[in-house]
Length: 350
Ligand SMILES: [Zn+2]
View 1 (cartoon, rainbow, N blue to C red):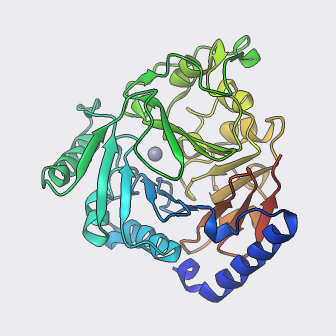
View 2 (cartoon, rainbow, N blue to C red; view 1 turned 135 degrees about the vertical axis):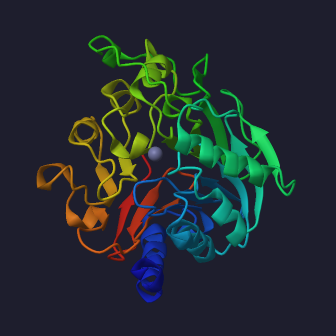
């Protein structure tokens, strides 16, 4: 839990960020902008967005068990952001590394609304059935609002726009503003295997904050990436790509990544989960990529397929639970903070 104890370093880093932003342009100070915490849940997902007005969206809740480790880390991020409640918790799909932590989280911090894609479609899988049942029990308490999201709809979150692009195996029919060009990456694309798990059912969103565009597709697999991105790129380009499926090779094809051409990619991999060399290579070869950040050194990747230490929140060795944090302004400028080092890297508006 070293990351959460490094408050002094973090405070110093934040004041440095304030200084950098003030020098760069008359953009809002980072703490008045959008804050995004990439919480380390060891190869699951938990991404917390907090708007300048203090409205919040959490995408996924990490794993069950571990004495509430993931709920503790998410609550730690919420506390750091100065919020006492999570307004919206979005569940991308019903795998234990995404929805598994929901009951522990709800016991730890108040939640307003849960958003998901509807039914569990992987009823043959014992683990998916178990975590889905626990989630349904939570919803049946009557304490929460509940939204089943459909592609194309904009979720009722204020202070940023959250548009659904995929849900329950369906993709948006029409191009979004900024999208609609032919995707040249489709010509040579192999036809990926059809995935029959919950992964291709992932609830994916394009999040915009002023000029900043962030894409999160959960664990969406390459077969659905092809539907979403070919022959036309319906999304357009993005600034930040939250690497699909923790950087596993079944997701993050060139058809997607090279068309959205992110400036920065952030991979929520664990030491032993995600971070496949094939997916890592696709990101690194993407034209216009400035940096890839990883939550962990990937053992599968080895030294040839991991970023430099300054871009890693957690190095090899005992688990430290360090996080990455993005602060963003409406002009599209943003910065990434590594909680392990306290270092900040700034990306100017383009
Ligand atoms: Zn996952």
